[in-house]
Length: 91
Image 1 (cartoon, rainbow, N blue to C red):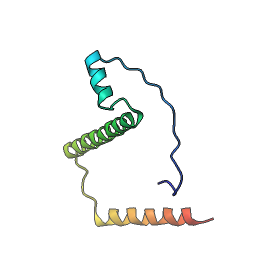
Image 2 (cartoon, rainbow, N blue to C red):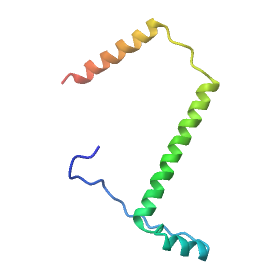
Image 3 (cartoon, rainbow, N blue to C red):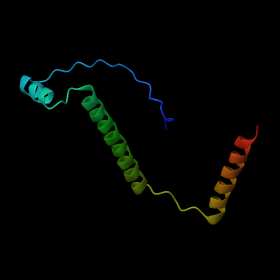
Image 4 (spheres, rainbow, N blue to C red):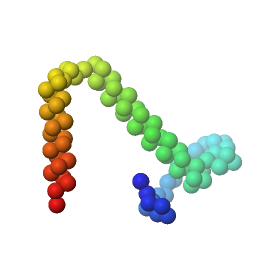
């Protein structure tokens, strides 16, 4: 999360694409070749890729479910987490 007033670091990336003339003309008229539109499309594509990865992970887990944990195993995980938090909090 960014602090108020701070902007994210920006990188300049030059991209050259070949499009059919008609498609290029339509995209330009629609404003889709402007930096803001390209940024939005890249962000949307990245989100779609992350969602696709989650769907694949869910399918793998559904095909190979993990065995249920016993209450003792759950408590051991909680205890280990709390111990790690305490260790990390020490100077």
